[in-house]
Each structure stands twice: as structure tokens, then as C-alpha cells.
Amino acid sequence: MTTQLIAGATRGSGLENGMTLWDRAVAFSVRRLIHTQSWDDPEADLAALQLPLGSTIVTVSSGGCNALSYLTAQPAQIFAVDRSESQLALLKLRLAGVRAFGSYDEFWEFFGEAASPANAERYLQKLRPLLDAPTRSYWDGHNVLGRRRYTYFTDGLYRHGLLGRAIGFAHQITRVLGIDLDVLLMEAVDSPARLEAMARLGRLFHSTPLRLVARAQALLFSLGISPQQRALLQAEAPLDVVLYRRLLRLIDGHPADSNYFAWQALRRAYSGPDDRCLPPYLQRRHFPRMRNGVGVIIPVRANLAQFLDSLPAREVDAVALLDVQDSMGVDDIRKLWTAIDRAGSERIRVVCRTTGSASPLEAVTLSGLRGRWQRDEERSAVGAELDRSGIYGGFHCYVRCA
Image 1 (spheres, rainbow, N blue to C red):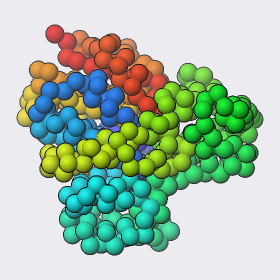
Image 2: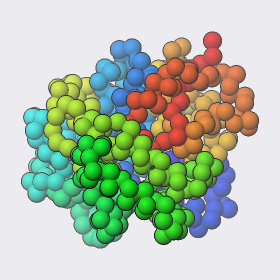
Image 3: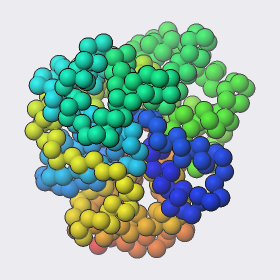
């Protein structure tokens, strides 16, 4: 789940002076690399948005995967906005890779497999010269363990970042309990081995130790779950029950041979170079389009609402909010949608995800927005059906009221 804008949201809500230690920990943590890939399905977004050629898109950057994948819709501009320096550094590195690597195989080895010792030299020789000074400083810099960040690509990028390490911790627990994640991922759904692994997984999630672990706020934040999102999850059912349901939907909702989110959850890696079980930007068939279109992606470090206010009126055709509203106050959500309304073209469409099932625009306190925006039930249903990540409670597509 997306946490990059929490710091801005808490400041924008006037909470800074009264922030708890937990609030300050959240605000500090969003400066670190959390997501090494986006956990929002870009193909679900595009199916719901149904964008004409030459559209202008504004999206939250997160891992940068979606901004690149939106190039398959042949837009005129993509503004990838984030307050997190680390997340934008990852997007900029991916953009440099599209420009620098002349072959799909080399691009795949660096960003898809992301685990070759040769990638250190590739970074130094091919990518580093294309980076701006802040981005170069970030990847040249050291993490808290004293390791240079560009070496993440030499032993498995997707094992790094706050979320990648949290998933790795969960993997250690499952190994101790004899739950074979490869069986869950690759065996037939009705095979005896998979049925046994599923039964063990169910016993784990219904155990007292797991219920106690689920109460640990630090652990939930490592999964990208903010305190506000925790409250939304608990409103649905006990937290361990909700997490179990979401996990089942992730690993069973779509076939594993086409669901790269399941591979990332169960292996912290992609299945391999092909045109099926990968985000669009990593698929071989799209590599020429990535190279031809990469110049239309513009990384922006800014507050999302303020950035939208800086654009000319009626400039934007689509906005992808991911789940940022879950961690925003009422006033910030109102400002955000007012900014979208001003910047949006006549055909503006907005997609967003929510931790709970309900959209924040359905809240009584935001009833005024519903006079300008209406939820497109058909497109929302399409996006929810296609979204393979399975970790959200709601997918919503909005259009301006006629």
C-alpha cells in the first residue's frame, strides 16, 4: 500500500504540532525506500480509465512501475508526483535504464531479475551519468547498514525496501512452520501438497501468536499500512481475519502464471522474462514503446494537490491516486478533489483504491464533493475485477457529474 504522502498529509491536516511519536515515526519513515515495485495493478487502471491517445495523466509515483506501464496507452504526458525522494529516485533510475540499455535482455537483467553482480558496473558506467545530482547522490549513498544503495540490484532489488524486508521476515516464519510458499505459487490448486500448505497457512492466521503480531503497529507499517489504514481494516473484521482474506485473494484470485503480484508476495521476485506474468513496462513486447515514449514521463517532487493547482486549468485527463486518500484528513481530501476539478479536462477520470470497501467521497463530511463527482459503477467494477494485487478493499473510478 502507498505511504509516500503520509508526511504531507499529516502536515496538511494541521497535526504536526500535536503529532504523537508514532506519527513522527511514520513521517520519518516515508523518506526511506518503501516500495521497490508498485502494488497497484496498472492494467486495471487503464481498463477503467479507457484513455484516448494523447491523454495527460497525473499519478502518484510510488515504485515508478505504473507511470512507465501507462506508456502502453500512448499518452502525451505523465506527471509522476511524490513527496518521497527515495521513491522518485527509483523512478528516475528506471527512466535512465530505459534510455541507457539498448536491448531488452540487459534492461531485464537490471530491473527485472535485478540480482546480477554485473549490475553494479552497469550502474556506474551506463546509468549514473544520466542521473541528476540528487538522484545520483541517493543511489551512490549508503543505507543504514553502510551499504551503497545501487548494490541492491546485485542481489535482488525486490528483497530490499521496507516492504521487501517485511515480506522476507514473513517468509522466515512460514519456513519455520513448514509452509512451502513455492507449492502455494506453482502447484495446481487441488493438489494434495497445495491443499496441505493452504491448511497450514489457515492455522497460522487463526493462531493466538499471529493475532498478537497483528496488533504490532511497527510490523503493520513495514507492510505499508498506516495507522489510518489499520483502523479501516479493523472496521471490516478482526485484523488477522482481514489480512488472511486479503492474502487468499492475492494468491488465489487470479492464476499465478499471470499474477506477478503473487510472485512478489511469495518469492520477492518475478517469474522470468516474458510477456505475461510481468508489469507491462517489463514485458519484452513493450520495450520498444518504453524507449520511444520515456520522454513523456515527468517526475515531480511535490504535494499532489499543490502540484495540480500549479497546472493550467483543464490540463489533465486522468488522475491515478493509488490509496493516498486513506492517510489524508477530510480537509486535505477536499482540497485534492477541488484541485483535480480545476485541472481536469472535460473528459477527466480519476481512479483510486481504498483499504476499506467504501470510497472516502461517500463520507458524510465530504458530501459536497458528490455534487461534482460521481462514481462510475461499471468502470469501478471492471477495475476491481482485473486488479490482481488483491490487497485493497475497494477500487473506485470517478467522473465529473454532467
